[in-house]
Image (cartoon, rainbow, N blue to C red; front, side):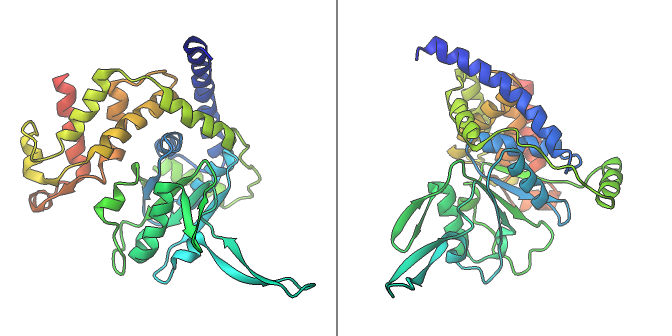
Length: 336
């Protein structure tokens, strides 16, 4: 296929995806009220072939949202409730000894665990010990699991969404920074507005018959993930993303003073990669064929929020990572 023909096909797919995104939002809204930004961020991560960390207080319908998203995309959904006694084999699967009744022949048979799904919700991932967290993170990184000495590929597309409760921290095993870095986005789910909450109460206390329709399939998602990789990016957008990430590091000569005052460790190179991938997916979802610096700014907060480590000065001044990132983005916008 010639480059010209490929570009023409890609432009057509971009237009179709823009329409599909509107329909996905419409189908999800049959079940979920509001949370449009969260849904768009989830789609961005999925199209970028990444994984997400969803943070929100209990009762915000996180599980229902992910299940509904999987349903509209016709993907297999699996939920794993992480607890202190969860073992790696509870995620990946286990071997059982099976006997053939007619012959009496015995052999080991592998029973697949809940990780063998397209969309996996790892509920309260910080409640399970590091050994079990590592099994999940290996599957996320390599898209395969090792069990009984064999490596097995996971179904594609494969998308993990891990949730954390920001309130209760007692008895938890916080994810180390090196493992947090494997998540493309850190997505914060906030309380609904007053009008949305009224609508939620009305809808959930009456008879509900509407079910979301399938809009895309797993095959479509894989095709779109390949498209995101082919999207061209200009050098100045790449340079902008790299500059933004490098300025989060207090040791850099051109880092702003507030970064040096409030940040212990900045984001690594993986943040630059995810900024570009996220900007590509965001641009395509908005109907554009190439990302701009504005698309990079749009994904800066979810990409950088869990990759910046603040120091005691930031805690004393009541400054969090969100405030630092917004200030940095604002400063770089003014410099353009």
